[in-house]
Amino acid sequence: MNRSVGYKLLERNENFYSPVESSDHGDHKYDAQVIGIIGCGTIAKIITDFQKERNLDADLKYFQDSDTSKAQNLASQADGMFVQDVGDMLDEVDLVIEAVSTQIAVEIIPQILRKGKDIIVTSIDAFLDLEFKNQVKSIAFENNCRIYAPSGDIAGLDGVKAASIGEIAGINLLIRNSPESLGILSGDESLGIATDEEILLFEGKTQDAVGKFPINLNIAAVLSIITNKEVDLKIIADPRVNHSYHEIRVTGDFGELETITQNTNWATDTKTSVLTAYSVIKLLENLNNNIKIGT
Image (cartoon, rainbow, N blue to C red; front, top):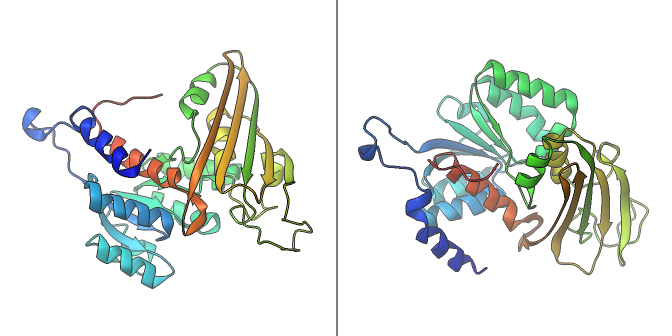
């Protein structure tokens, strides 16, 4: 779908999905949440651009990144503020968007939750570490805050969540992407493989893939978390593809579910699909919706 057409469709349904104004419901008032963004790469830029074009019902106020120039640039676009340290924004925000590497996310997520702040986590593969997942769940409970995980660049999660009420027999995930998008440079010998033809990088359980390849395992993590099941994972590097391809197959007492997504990667960042950033934007919009659609 053309991006401008997509915006028109959103505008057409605006009255249905948008929150009711306070004048219609007396004391009910919907103030835009003050948001801080940690990590000012592709995802943060797409969100900021959307805010400028569509007036997202959120106040993108604080921006932090180890690359100062990136954070300052986005802050100026959003009429927001650059902060040097994560802690500098936490007393002022309602919600934080984490858009950094998994290694950094593991360090900052507990800090944010201890301040009682809600967080949207894009580095969901951090929760493949069960000890870390249990730790942050406990911190969030103690501080009465929420952890949100966007659906990212796959489809069918509502169906998988519903299916998990019953017995799940198996979950299979196939990832097919270009070597560059998987973090493997052409001709890279560090992994002992050639990248000029299709090659199977990995086949096995998700837990066995953690830390072995320069690829995040967000999708496998989401599937594992919502079903509490191990995921059978296959990763294929294919130099012929120019998009992110994900195939999911779930079987159980509900029947069988299969989805295929082929997502456009961002032009200047082949590791990030457009749908990943869009899912964060939609999650932000849904936080204030009066009508919730989906499981």
